[in-house]
Image (cartoon, rainbow, N blue to C red; front, top):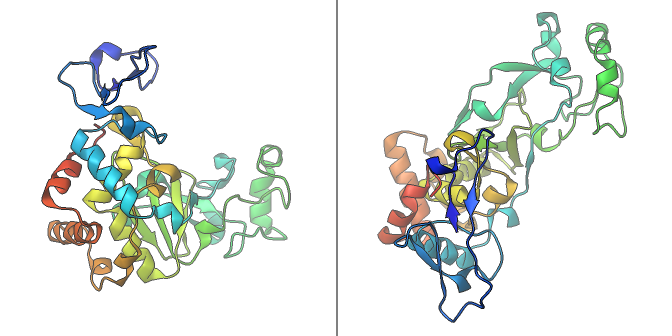
Length: 306
């Protein structure tokens, strides 16, 4: 099995992520090894390691060993937190960057590309014809009504519109929670931030986890921004163009999670300085029982797909 997404021989006019799968009709003998690459000296995995079902983790033998141990030892993040996409408009032209006169009814839109570790830099405004919980206004202000009326046909034909006013927004519950941990769906590496400002609304290019309070959110944000969790998320993520990956709910939800980290006195206070990153990585490594050899196996996976 060979990931050819960076192989110049597998270049196509269309965006594609080619994989070579070479198989035999023969039954595999005991101890059969699968070569993860086209060359004879490529890494090899015991085929029995893949009999439990997907995903197939195309990494080094040491990387696979670490990922397998953690999967056996710890619950997944998805067992404690539910991730879902952010707000969907179904008609961005109607809601994004409306005229300045509508600013009183706008919030700041956070797109996936606006998210960096521990921070967001929103670049666009989102028309918000709703209350603080995202429920649509029963009656629109005149200026908002006049603006949206120009898009009424498109808004009424949106596939998500099954009930309620035709100007409603979708998937608002998690996006309007008091405290939310978010990350971009498409990125070179997993980068998470905590939102506690109700004026910031993550769009559906972000994934969102609603958390209990700001401290829990800060701990979870630190966990997701650690080198080791980034590596494991990248290992499960689907490849995308330009060396990026899709950090969907399955990929991020499948990383290990230790509730014990919520009791750590300091991890939620660490920012993104070099010193803080070293300290954060040490705390997460200790929590997961990662030894230096295992850390060395995971480190190259944090920023790129193997």
